[in-house]
Amino acid sequence: EKIEAIFNAFAENGDGFISLAEMFKFMTSVFRVGLTPQVLTAINSMGATVRSPEELASVTALECFRDSDLNKDGKLSMEEFKNWFFAPEHDPGMSPSRAWAK
Image (tube, rainbow, N blue to C red; front, side, top):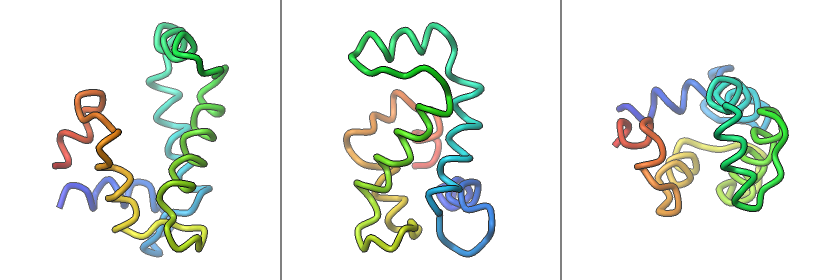
């Protein structure tokens, strides 16, 4: 399943879970590529204050864990990750990977 490939990209140590550190590391690498000056300007124009890929990765990872780590064990299971990844507030039109994973 495609979502498993995405999950495994996050869960780099192979333990079957995503830690906050793994989420942060993966998101940082994604945002270093995709956070152009134009995107940064657009994000900040919506009321956010983001100055770097690392800052955006930190905010995103913390929000993900706050919303998705339902048993509060400090890691995301495949099911918790799927619930976050496919949540209705995550518009698939905004992310090609979400549309591809369905």
